[in-house]
Length: 258
Ligand code: NI
Image (cartoon, rainbow, N blue to C red; front, side, top):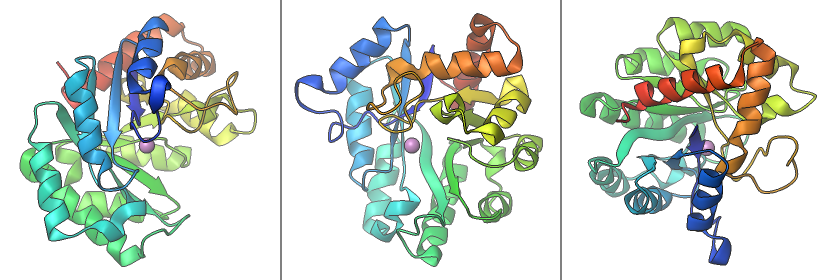
């Protein structure tokens, strides 16, 4: 089983209970492969994700600048990011996008960092991982304007409506479902998880947050992605093993992960 989106950042998982222990627990739980996202813990998290992927052959990574950190965008930072992106362990750019819920960086700064990264991804033919929170469709408009769907678009931790999911899928995009789907009060996400075409569906932990039931309240880690997969299979009336084959294949196809 693959966790398609986690943050195996040594600043989160540290000490004796560090990244290596987390990877070992995942493998013991049947999660043989993990995709760690080098974005979201400051600009420096990109280099840290690549270091983890270099150390673990069953971990691959992305590099990017999260909308929360868009204020850190500069020509020098961007050049460093693109240099990291040329490593063979880096299979995508992101997560990137717009977050108008927290607004941690000014919106025009978020849009600029987003567009620059999309252009770089297109040039390098890399797929992109999208973070979209309350942008009211602006994220999707920018993705269309920048031609991002030609190299691959994955909406991670998808929290939108079924109608918007259908638009994303009709453009050729992929949608990833996090542990929120195991919460009782997640009717909209459950409806999405049941409705995504099976060949466009991924599952993720987004560790260290959004821990699925029955571990809700604890720190999240890739070993818990089977709980999310099982819930999605129930919602779709599918056998969990069949769904796992499909989501693993989708993850590998999307990231062109050999
Ligand atoms: Ni994330």
